[in-house]
Image (cartoon, rainbow, N blue to C red; front, side, top):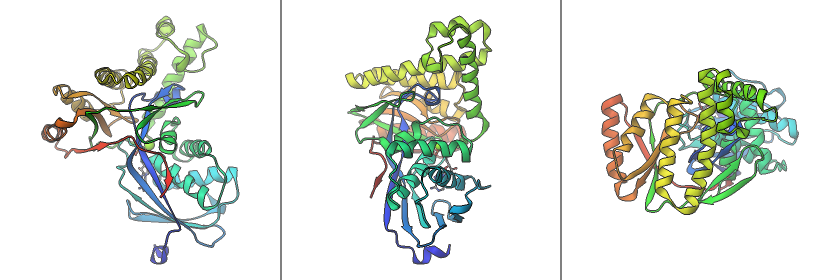
Length: 375
Ligand code: ADP
Ligand code: MG
């Protein structure tokens, strides 16, 4: 792209990916989640280009870019452009202070691996433009406009967790976020002598695919049935096991399974927060295995590759727990592994995975890290 020849950034933004320790698919059901940002990130290099409305965006990751006009923002046929365009559209609803800019993206965050490169992309851009043009947006406004951009331009009816974690995280902590009230608490996470090891199945999900939105609809269907007996219930967040069981006869079996996963998963998030507070790592590990069972058998958003890696980890006494992290259908499994066992675990898992699926496993440690910042 022409602008790259003379590009010198005036602002650099670091926008992290995230893991979610536990609480999967609970965010859009108005429940609890327990995420944190990680060190892997998208870096945004930005400058004003003096134009009123012409912008240039280039992704080093994809070695491709596009030009856009702020006065004619519309959805694109190219998927990744919609994350950018959606954010610009949402910002334009709130302020008209954005002018022409140039933006270069660099990333060491695997895309489509359940580490929320999508939220890193949306929030990093919003955060950067907020700084560059002094838009006066609060962190929470950035989080919310990024989420809405994903709904309207990308078409994924995501909850708020990914954007919240990318922007609001604090090093050495996970965020216990109540997705209904948006109240949150930073919980210190000290797993010593264990580490968080991610195994990337390299199976790339596509959250924009219908599965994610279908799960959301199934949960809403469950809520509608429960409301016949309990009119005050707004979401699965307000539903107990007893209430769910009482409505079971009226419910499709699949809808029941989806709802029972969410009800149990919300409980597990609160239990995990307690396990971390007490530093009960055995309990924390058991909660991860229980969560994965639900993800795989009840919510049915796992895949053979993730199931294989989680099962594999169970044979190793130095792994306390594991589950698929992220929206599902692949991406990464999150494993709590004793520090002395990390190398051996990765080596044996890689061999077994290669043998089973003929895919080279990618493995790395993640540390709970801080949210979006100016570098
Ligand atoms: P996840 O959020 O788990 O990584 P998603 O499917 O939600 O998976 O988002 C991945 C999408 O985000 C990619 O397919 C691409 O459209 C966009 N994306 C992420 N990182 C980049 C990047 N560095 N450059 C351009 N687009 C990116
Ligand atoms: Mg995503």
